[in-house]
Amino acid sequence: MEYKISELVALTNVPKSTILYYIREGLLPEAKKIKSNVHRYNNEHVELLKYIKYMQQEMGSSNEQLKTILENKNQSLSSSFSMLTPLMQTLSAIPSDAKHYTKEEFIEHYGFDSELLEKLLEDGILVPINSNDFTDKEASIIRLIEKFEELHIEYEIIKEYVQHAKKLSELEHSVQKKLCSVRTDEDFPTLWKIMFETLFNAKEYIFSRYTHQVLYKALKDEIN
Image (cartoon, rainbow, N blue to C red; front, side, top):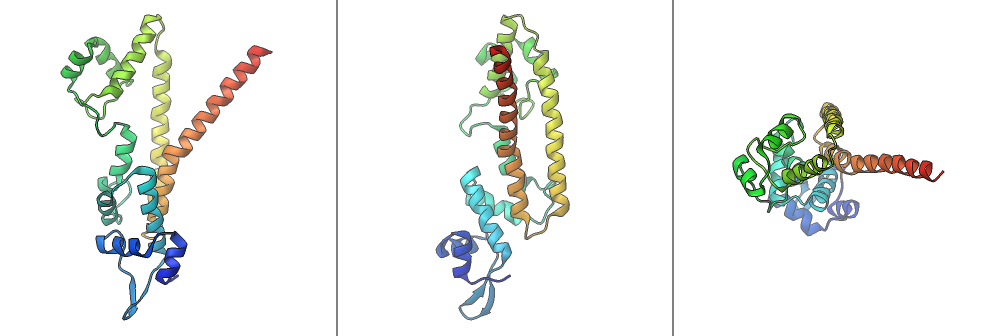
């Protein structure tokens, strides 16, 4: 379906000036030129504008990041690192201003026991983004395990939690592969939105609600 610029503005709630700016910057494809000063837009423009707005508002993506992603959108969702970059940055959960340490620097700075650190790495409880890149995220997990040790509680339950997390990551990859199998240029933005919504909103909702159900039942049983 084709749209006038005014119709595109109405459909996406994106100002005309912004749409033209995105075209100049390469975030949107050129409009179909009917004749001088008469241009038509299509559903791809609609979906891309929705995608850009979503990525900017929900993920904080810059125009430069989005341009790189969209320039590579014809590649597979699973093979193009440039498309995965915003997702990977968000999943790492490492603040942009975080301080990074080598393993030796990390141990010295926080005063952690090196044997405990190696055990947590071996058990998969500590999962640095890179093998020699540690931040306060890793420190917070070690502090948690130290609390378990102080109370003489085996952290087997945490190891079990890790196994479930690994299984979930495999399921999430299955979702990604299914999206790859049905993608087209036109529905690329919608598929990516599904991926982000599944990994962040849906996962948080489902986990939190089931935790709420279990704890609520435990409270009711205790009262009764």
